[in-house]
Amino acid sequence: MNKRERVAAAFKGQETDHVAVCMWKHVPPEFWGDDDKFAEEQARFLHSTDVDFMKLSGDKFFGWPAPVLKDIENPANLLWIKPLGPDHPFIRGQIERTKKVVKALDDECPAIYLIFAPLSYIRLQIGYPKMMRFIRENPEAMKYACQVVAEDVKLVVQGVIQEAGADGIFFSAQSGEVNRFTAEEYRDWVMPSDKTVLDYANTLSDMNAIHFCAWEEVPNRLSVWQDYKAPVVSWSRYFDIMDIREAKKHFGCTVPAPDTFSTHCIGRAPAG
Image 1: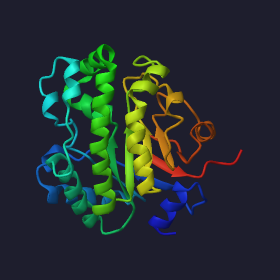
Image 2: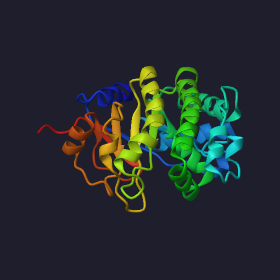
Image 3: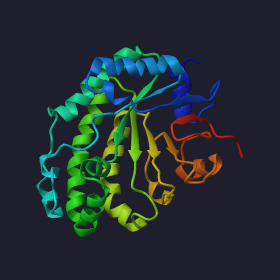
Image 4: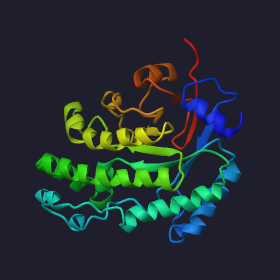
């Protein structure tokens, strides 16, 4: 099997000649200002690790640059958020840079592009304390803002897959900690905009993956993510304790073999 055959089989839950391996790290900030150097750094990482597939970094494109989010203090002002639109530098910049990265990888392996949850893009702009205050004081305004962001994120997804040549997306689901939202709140406040992006991505590619993020030693409420569909999911096994067989049954798809936070091996789970 070559890398494409191996990864395609792994994403479908089929047998492979060996476990498909991926590892990643953020690209150092000194490369963020030059797309050509950024692409070279991603290619260098591939050649130095010989991974089976690449997670393409979204570095630099983190906080959502909607003007209304700048210095926002009143959650009701989230209702003023406007779409960035397809020509905005935040959207076009990700597509154009991904074109260069995909070209630099020269089809040596599949590549999937990092996409954050819509709420996370807002949080990366305004910070966790303000995000939590706003969503509790005016959940409908935050839900509206997340849906506006989600529609723009769909433009990024479409562009990096159909125009730039990425094989799919790596969707970073967040804010599922057991001490952050109840299951009902998460399903009402966070899930709709997440599903807007994920369900759309799944119409464009059968090589999408979801990572259920965790940090600060707080476990996630994994039950809220059972309705998130992708060929592959990964989770932070150190915080969310679940073995491979249990995870495969829980999520109903291909899951990673034992991993660290930044190294994931995917393949068919052992029988039994």
